[in-house]
Length: 424
Length: 158
Image (cartoon, rainbow over all chains, first blue to last red; front, side, top):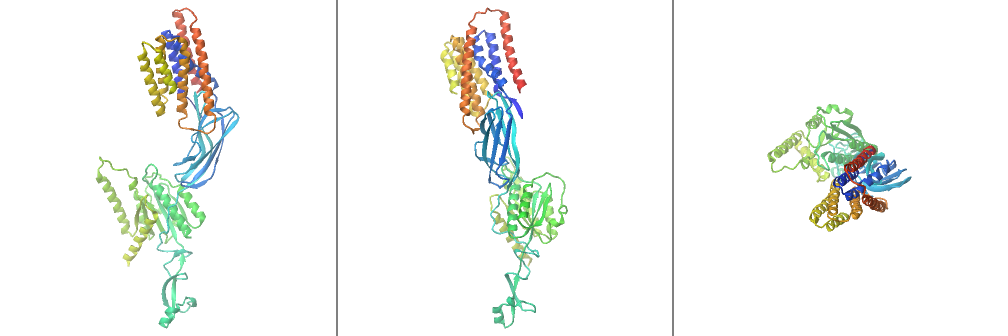
């Protein structure tokens, strides 16, 4: 707890001293009378001033919520000596605001009594926070001293990123041997029709296509595509970010990653995570609701850590990048290390797709005195980076904050279809 | 603001030959106080009180009865207390009832005490106790001692 003298005490003491000295110097007793109350208030207030001796209990309504969600916070204050005037402000998570309840609250706590405060907080920014603490600024009855202290007991609160609306996700080029929801390219037992072929010894009778057989006079059977699952690795580039006051490319990256992870896991695919930046973090691919929470928790820890060390893809454990996995990279394409790692992955045969989290809206607006050539050169360099990936057969599609993620996914899918046709 | 305007207005109305000087002190003091309260600046309060006190001193020098000085003192204290109250609570919302009533009761008590103490001081000042350099020195020493005591107590308590 810190205790400071209020500006009121300083002002009153100064006015009292000035008035009394002026009264003596000018021989005017009225000035002493005018100055008297400013001496009287400190003379009464200083002996009365006591530390507030607050005891507090806090309760947070939930330990997890989503961006934009609301959480209740209750705080109980109790003082044995009494507090005449106290302002209580909850310590809010980043981007948070109080939507219900007086804030900062002005309270008076009677001696031996308690006061309960209830707030509803809206969490505006994803992340892992400690909530439940408040700052109390209390004053003695005459407001001569200010006591500031942190009260309450911090409790963890996880704010999960809000999901984008996505109807379909990128289909990987290759599937895994285990059952899933993706239609595989190979032919085996399944549901989706693939082709017709002549009957061979060992084919099941129920696969005979009787119409084709009747037309040709020979036995023909249906070939089918099986449903398989896939391995998807979400690759987050966290070397640098472009930031505005309220949001950044990292926010969009995390939001997109959470959305894609949820969608792929809903399709019973295995999803892994590589956070490639100043701090390297990874999750091996797995499926299920537990993996979903693991991924979201790992995303909450994603942050920009400044590092000048060169890092390449060899730092990522091999089991994190299984063969035939689809690597969906989310990158602002600002750091050479992430670009080199993605190109390396492609050269090693991985199916890579890049969603470019555009830093252009986050760039400062060029003023009249700025040379527009600089911005044009920067945009040209970004275009060259995209072209380099296109040459490798990697689709790169720009995603801006105002656009729907589904549009970007469709663009990537269209690029992959066109590339497939070109290969033919 | 109303109390500041009242104190300043009474000082201007009480002055006779020095009315312009009293008005020149009261009006800017009230305006500066209004601007300070609007912008949330505590620094203006002591300067406004000083200017209003100076305007009151001008009207006393211009012939107003010294017996009215406790009323001016009470008015100045009310201006100071209400100004600081306004500045302290401008960002917060009351969460429990009765805070304002208690504060008003406290302020009323302080104002009443000021008038009582002022009346005692006025009556003491009317006692003929002689004059001279020694008495002046004692008065200066007492004023300095009081100011020093206030500063020392506030420093120790903080």
